[in-house]
Image 1 (spheres, rainbow, N blue to C red):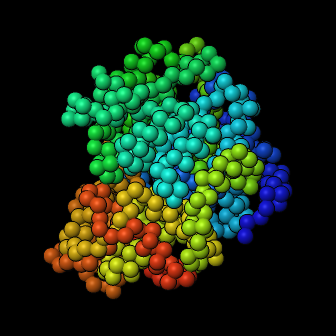
Image 2 (cartoon, one colour; image 1 turned 30 degrees about the horizontal axis):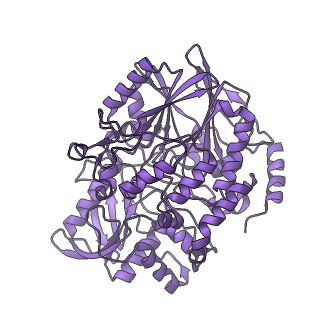
Length: 596
């Protein structure tokens, strides 16, 4: 059981006196101003009086309106140029890189270390009512006309209420939060007319430079009257917006997830094409610089951090990239050199757990210096905003009886995040196998999904957090051993291709009833070896196996929604135990700081 807020604040006061809270001293090297942990403040949400532009950023909240637990990964492998650099650092290696003291509030926020025990001490994170309290405070402290709130996307998907309201609950929550600009990814897993409706209800600006109307649809485009559509360029949405912040002109360019029609069903959004389009990005930056004369150029991105790092190296003229998609909570920005100077690249975690704040000193038409702090949103440290709390209660009210059903009790920490398998993923795979009568289960390597502590009830809310998508149907079918291998190879190449532009984000497909060996350094077709069933039987390429799965991107699968399958399994189990975690044997990764 977590302690109450009063007890928590007392503990934090003692921790501050002992130097165990995130610090507020600023140390800089050139323009690399980063808030470090050298001296602990009594107030972890205090910021220095610095600069004249303050950009607040959250991303990948996945519709989590209430505070949650979220375990950071213990496996986030970096390959090639990504070896040993953020975001591919976990556990103690991450703490060492960013000079974070072990066994502190900050260490708990950024790593998986001692997760269960630390969670009992520090409590839950996130929650839109607590986030709104923090945002309102920062606007008051820093100046309303000097602050901008950016949402990196993956906001309308990830909970039961988001699914049942088709994202409308999150549009309303973001309007109350005061989001100024957003871009998207899972937003596009609703039907195209629902996307257009939600953007119409959103009070901020939705921007994306890399979504176009395809040629076939452009002749008689169904959303031709939509305010963001440009008939001349065939861009479906506004590519950028200009914000005047106390006399400083800030350009915010949008970059939606480039592989949406590949990673998610294109049948929902048939008129739109996506892509990285770094050439178009350079052209937009040049046009904005020339025509709009901004003092600051920001890209609000859903590329994933590795893709952002590469884009920052090849596209010049961008001051800051606020990134999302890969759910990496990175305490300090990466400084990327390019022919135009340098670009700061950040990533602000997921599930409402963090709020990034970039403070800029902008003078003479350019950024002179910066400070950055990625603030963990601890619900025990922030009073919930009353108006947002009432809104959340209202939107959840029609579904609360369903969501509060206690299905089983967790025997261990249930989590998803990590390159290969998580304990909640294993529960999903076990459910697919048992309910479907299958030998093998395949489950997508989504990075969203909240955590459950040992001894806690697993509610329908938790199950929806793990499974709630708009294409949830399950299947049971025959697959050859070669087909199964091809699937694993394809996903592994998506994850471990040394060129970030060929990575789509997400993690390795989760498996149940199947073990294998993986060498991430190999090329496609050679990474996966020694595939065996749980009983040790070798998988044969030309033999068929019964496979259960869900979330088909192509044609709609015939089975019932995955959350019904998992709920049925948990009700029968009563206690959710992991008898075997089907995590692969990893070779060739000795000494990699992305595995612990």
